[in-house]
Amino acid sequence: MPGIDECLLEAMSLPGARGAWLVDWTSGLALGSAGESPVGDHETTAAESAELARSAAEFESTDGSAEPSGPPGAAPVEDLIVTTRTGYHVIRFVETAFDSSVCLHLWLDRTAGNLALARIRLGDLAERLVLG
Image (tube, rainbow, N blue to C red):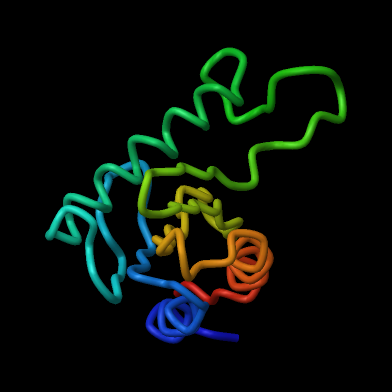
């Protein structure tokens, strides 16, 4: 089971990976980072990732609680995909034993990256990640 550094290095081994972050989306802090940043600063990228994750969490909740909205049995948001002209940003929520306010963010080059593979591998990494 990988820790933060191993997880980010494994994410960076994906085809087209340009940068990877583990982010606490309630505070906007990067718990770890690897590779490049699309804005030149890993902390800014982490803060922007956190904003997207909080928006998804608000979209998912009905009354500010952590309960998902929609019909009974509706699944919570697993990941977000943001597409730009030059890349993909995949943000995967990580289930944790504590407050589950952590997400993995992977930045892929649009030409060299494989979005489907990235989603599968980030899901696997999120399940195996050991925080502690």
